[in-house]
Image 1 (tube, one colour):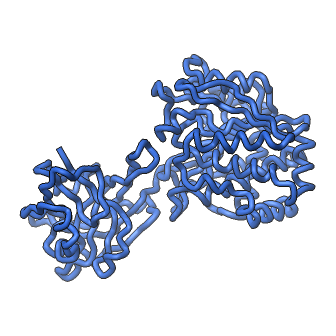
Image 2 (cartoon, rainbow, N blue to C red; image 1 turned 120 degrees about the horizontal axis):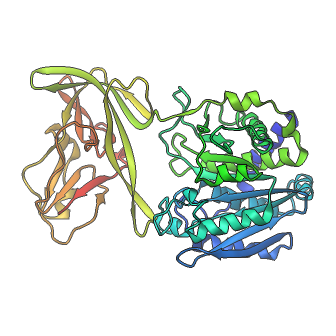
Image 3 (cartoon, rainbow, N blue to C red; image 1 turned 90 degrees about the vertical axis):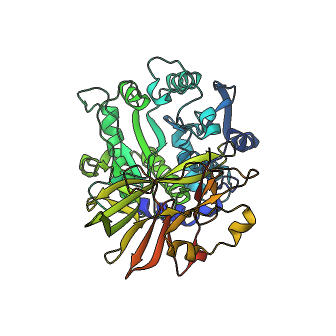
Length: 473
């Protein structure tokens, strides 16, 4: 294991040599990966085959490498908005494409393993950056009915390979914690059950042992950030059925990491973890692993929030009370899903001591005042550039009115919300699922503002790097 850990650290330290530089964020498209796949044809060690087309006619590729007897099948992005492992697979392709570094390790892997990859199962979903395919069907609930072309392709490839191991690569929400901890579940695992009885078949046992090896490696890099999904059987899912049909399936999900919304660090962790797992399969070292490690992985808990403001005083009528306020952000697609803006929502109010935030602030001595809309309208964008945000907040306002027929959109970079042409303003109530706009006062002086969930220090307005909302009819 010490040698395996050293190998993982070597992979970690050399990662930038293999990172695919054209994939810089999560919202890449099918057209971005096709040239990268075509490039692999320049090396005889790679096999590249078109195994079918998506519902909208995009090619789905199977990439293969290696000549070993043990077969490993890896598929990613069957949910179109879950691309972290997809980019890691292209980093791995670069690793194998290279002829200079890690020659002995690569020779060892490729002589013992035959590797098969579908990097993007759901290219139509990726085009819209949405979970489901263009029919609005969840591909991971279509293994039985086979109503989508993408599900048919995945099943046909699986049937043709009869792989020893399968890697089902996904992303999960940022709201999961690793058990009852304050740490996000950054990587989560599951060895899916083959039936409702959760039978411990040999393929499932092998997957559990392999995950144990992967956890030992991950503890070098992200200790305490590893979670496990419930092993309740899902009869419509690919992983559960592939396990039932004789393949040891590892579900790997990339969750959240602080200050890494684009998941570029977790992409790197995927790269290291998967290559380390392949090493374990090639050497069969996983067979020596105890099931206790898998069984001891804490189950995911949905106790993470994007932002928690703690111990705020709120006054309603004549009653003053103390609450925590939890805020989450939703990504709203724009520009053909190539980009996004964030829309905040108050997720919970009250005693949030069992929750943790990616960001947390203690406001024990502060009073929360709901943000109001300034009643005097502005008539041009030029006027907005002259607004003093600190003065606006001191007056209790987080929203302004704008009469401008040539202005539209859903968000803005101004540190205040814009109500356009007599549209309905956001509610001034502090309520569940409501807008997060308020002023935080200490000793009756405004110190902070929250605009669309983004916390603004009034002594450092220039640090604002969020987005406000535009409300229009």
